[in-house]
Length: 80
Image 1 (spheres, one colour):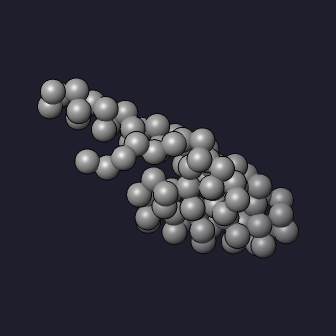
Image 2: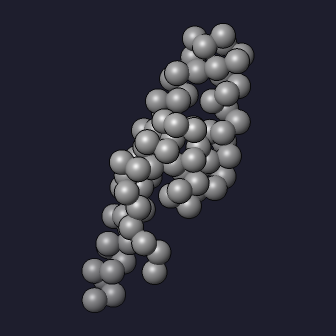
Image 3: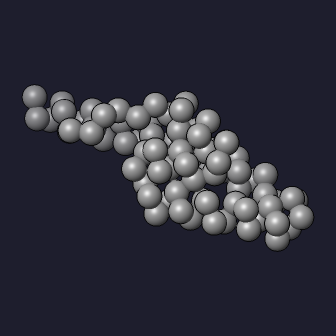
């Protein structure tokens, strides 16, 4: 069984490098998405909207870590 993920760590990782928190959670395609989209928005809008993508990447990493943990806990409860 996969280990529990720390939502705080996932968020911090995505604050440092957008998408790394998703990769930490095991969401590789989501991580690649944020790794491409966020710098594109930073550069393409001259920084006007890049920060929004950056915050969303951290927020979704945190949310998905909590979601993954809840699914694992529910599966453990159902099996036991």
